[in-house]
Image 1 (spheres, helix red, strand yellow):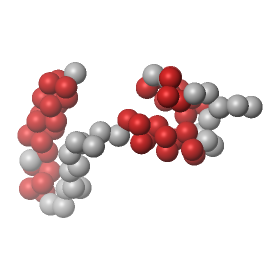
Image 2: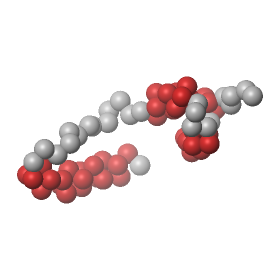
Image 3: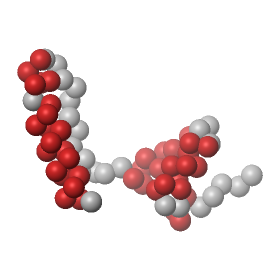
Length: 70
């Protein structure tokens, strides 16, 4: 069985392929490489109650950023 051309697949098509072919690690790596946002901000895990208290503000900022990009 030959693999589909991942370069022509849309993100939803590629995601569906990966869900149906979970053993295809090469496809998963290509998907991650292709759709990973190099500008994504990574937040550390909360380490204190204070961190958790700030979560609503951080989450709101994230949602605003998503709306601007979309």
